[in-house]
Length: 228
Image 1: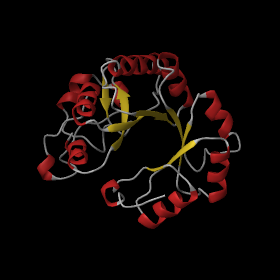
Image 2: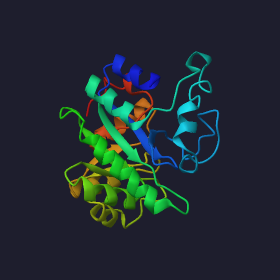
Image 3: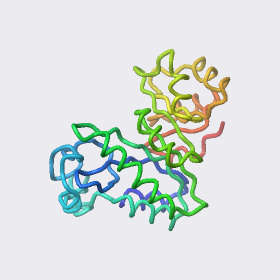
């Protein structure tokens, strides 16, 4: 939550974050599939119970002053968005393992339920690298905005078919390997484009000059002056 609160203190209107689910079907805000890198416990999040995740320290690895930070819950995220009226691009992580389909269904069900109390002033984009996760969420919340994440490797010739299968109107392509010609083709199909992850201001300006709609970055506060 310390990182989210930093966004609230700046003039940044959007955050990007990720949702995963535990073995006992509780939804948390965490980027990695495994807990090892950003907490003091280990293992894939879908293999541990929520009590372990709630007790984990998610801040000490970054800096001593963040020791004691916890992995946020989905409810905490919704509360934060409601209080600060900050918009969110929320990525649904793919679920793996023998119980993957069941837990994937539970993840989207709990997310859909939580969104029922989201303030109407907050804008959302639901994104994923996994088309199945987007399709599952679309069945529950067809009126939301959906985006497909593409890496350089997955942005193949069939990318537009994937978009249509997911009912997505927004493309989230990797900046690596993205060309002006590819951007033009996406625009010709009528898609909104948000490019990830761009931490070079000159590259961000180039992409905006090509007509992309948004930049996903770790230095958003230093890019506020950029214009299309």
